[in-house]
Length: 451
Image (cartoon, rainbow, N blue to C red; front, top):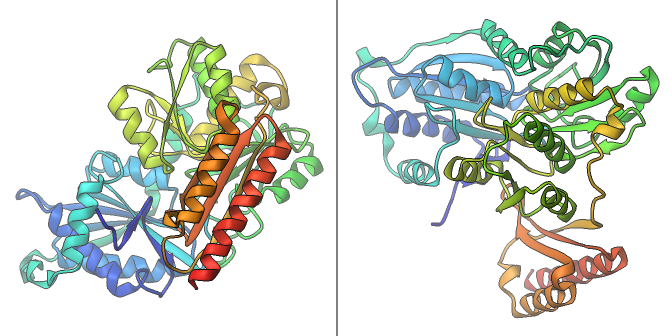
């Protein structure tokens, strides 16, 4: 089905430019409120946000929409995405909303929606919302005496902090560990350092001074150089880099080496296998995860189920097939024993538990396999469908034939930006680089011709 508003992770775009306008945000509130207004009880929605300047604008617009639809609104303020998912269930809300564009720069923003079970909405529900957005929704407004109320509940971040702390095994303490954490000037700038300190760690924090425009700016999981320098400077045992809404994590070891989501999934899978907690006889990841992860799991007698890109599709597969660990190379790690969506801080705690139990440096614990050479490049396009061009299709077919069974090729449009992502991996690094370079050139030429 064709989507006008929703991408792979909610509605996203540049702030104050369609669809990220206050008018559409208000309409989203009315449409979603209308769909979830079932029964005679007082309906409620919880709204969290990251630290973007545009969050104030979109938050107020959503409040107007939801209250106009007759729902009571609980405003959580800056708080991680997984906290919104958790509090949606904890507060028995009918809907949860996170205002965030995740790892994108401050100019962008987005609206993520969670159902009463804490899971992201299905494609079918998103389609229903889109249909309502394009209709005259004002006939759905609540009667004057049924308009909703709104109130701010800042203290509920401490519910999330306590929840996070309980995910660490009881016999494990973080005492003796010096942890450097980069909060990306984002949603976790209060909760993450607090939780780690209360668990006993010596905490050094960066990226915890948001000003509305510095979220993800030269910091966080997509720009870990600042954290690498801080780890070296303070001689930390580990560095933890979250993204703007804290649903993903990247680790930096004591030597300043970056450890991505694939390695973290391998650590957690192996740890849970040893504890006889791993379900599904493997884990779930996307088509972007490294072939080295697949080979590592195979040696352990475990499988790797692959989905299309997007943590919601990982979660969908986990729920349908009984897995309890999944994620993405980018650092979205989902552990259904603890939550319904990616949680960077909880994933980091599982890694820290493994480090403490083994009594080994992070560099040894987290280097579970040698990654197969992998290269990802993006091609920006402004319109058309370059991946349907015969010249591009022929180039892709030739590349796949050349790689054979010794590698993989993944070419897909981004779900959040006007980009074509070209990824190849294989045992021969020079071959991978040549194949990606050739494909990027072919797609670029087709795009230029179309323009």
